Image: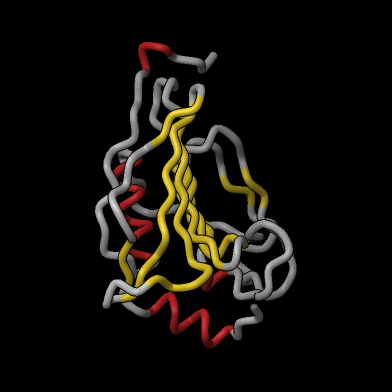
Length: 167
């Protein structure tokens, strides 16, 4: 389905929630969760889905959460990623973010307002460091839900740092 930029703007601005009971599912050393997004009346919004994942065996809880539209990322947040990210340099990315390198271990958000291109054929091109930095993945999840206009509770992901895989 082709959607206009204005339709996506309105979709993000509208009050939303998540459908059903949310539970993290563990597979190996990663936990994941997904949910359909609903409007303020509880009706499913076709093509809109929230997904999150988090490693369970790292000394510091890391994770990512993404809002997908028609299977493509609309907005994403990476909490304390273990790698740097270099923003792309093409329009419509704001000039102050073009080619900027984001440090590892700093929570970053890849927002719609910085990446207003649809349809999207690849990953989101530009991110920015979250300020102030959330101290936990749960704080980062709450911040992301707020940025997406989603009123919901996502339970804390499983985390067992005693089984640490970091080197």
